[in-house]
Length: 168
Image (cartoon, rainbow, N blue to C red; front, side):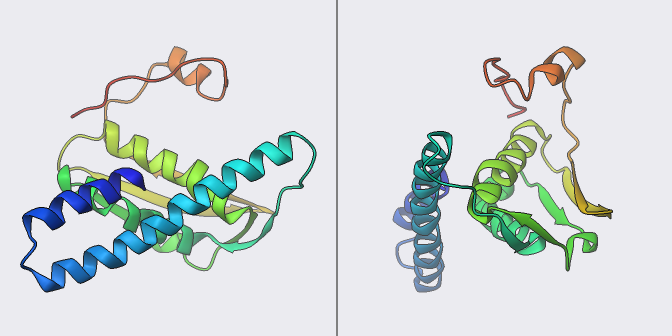
């Protein structure tokens, strides 16, 4: 959210005479401000959960809406690399029991950010979903460089570093 806000501020300085652009900017800035506030709130809540002072707030959540909100947050990054983020019809109507803020900010945004980072210019990123018993399986598919099995084995280990340079 901070990078999107920063990018939009730079664009506002360039296109300062365009009232339609300014209105769109202020709408996005307001949304980003809320997202940043929610990230900070979520981080505080995660610390409280780890300390045993708070329980996770799982609630029925519209998964498709979370994905659309996340897509909107990455609009500028997607445009910069000429990427299309396709949220498939299979995600519509799905509800999951999640903490909506943590799910969007810590899970969905991270996966989309990585997909953008490692995708080649002019390539699609597809998000599909399927339901199996009481679980929802989200599948994010990009057309980037991929990762080695060694790196993939470290991805959920909090003490291992998996940072690397993206495609552009």
